[in-house]
Image (tube, rainbow, N blue to C red):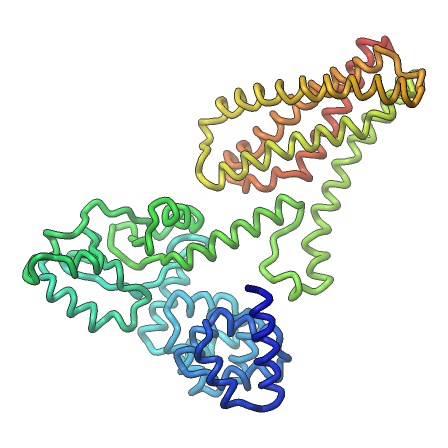
Length: 459
């Protein structure tokens, strides 16, 4: 698929360079807006307005929504007032609100000036809600029906209003106070036995909804769980104020997944794509965590320094430090990734911590025993016999293997408990991911190692 798009992209760019605008336009109107938006990423800034003006009005607006922020800003600055009004008039309210949030103040003024009063009011309403809440990503463009309407009247209303709505398949039933009382689908209306059937007789009254303050990630999870095309959103008085559509929910899930991945890798989340980020921006997002992890790593050095005498007395112990630290870090990372994923999907709650700990203990015992037995044989056969390292005695082998088993147990507990603890403190569990947990486990593994060395070797 990607290779085919690259071929099409090269052909379109060739047509643009050859100024064959008529042929180019004929091809563009057959393409999906997302694919056209991807084409703009390959263009020089000077050619972006030229290609955009070839698109029909409706397709241009749909493509504009899918474009990167930089390209959108470039176009807006170059638009005449009439051109900007044409684009803004075609945008859905949630897309217009998202655009306003991203643009600098002088560009926002032009956008709001170009919007009609109703659109301006709707945008301002959405912008009032907290960032990352359901209210901030909803659209106010939905079809509302009344319980006393007949099926025929409902279908007529959908025909009249549906053209400007983001989705019409699911319609929401509200009373005279705009309180949500039910929902009905177009399928229900079309398959109704009688056109005179009241909506109250066929509507679903047990409606699942979100509030304006519900976290956007939770709304996305609800849409995924119930396989909805849209989620109704109500205010504190149960009045319906908008809907969150599945495409917006997918964007939320992608953004949240990207943020978690970056935080798990020890970076501050960035909103820009990699190729659009400058070297200095990458530096800003990476250096804080690198400095923090560097500082936490000094504890490892302090532990090794405090046991210098033990290492000097039994030099063979030094060779196994990297293996213990690496294995402990890997075990901690495995647990933390599993727990973070379960928390993000809503599979785990804070009160599940005891069940998590018990499960991780059993898993760690199995992993630790297998690793210790395997490592015992490996050290004795390879390091001691094949490589002829006489300093590795049976007791040294036992110290390493016992330390390994206990390190695996502690690492898995740390990796499981820290993300849950972060969630309890209202922090993102992804903060307690690989780099951070690895630093903690490194220190723990060394302490365990030297404790066993002191006990079993008398150092």
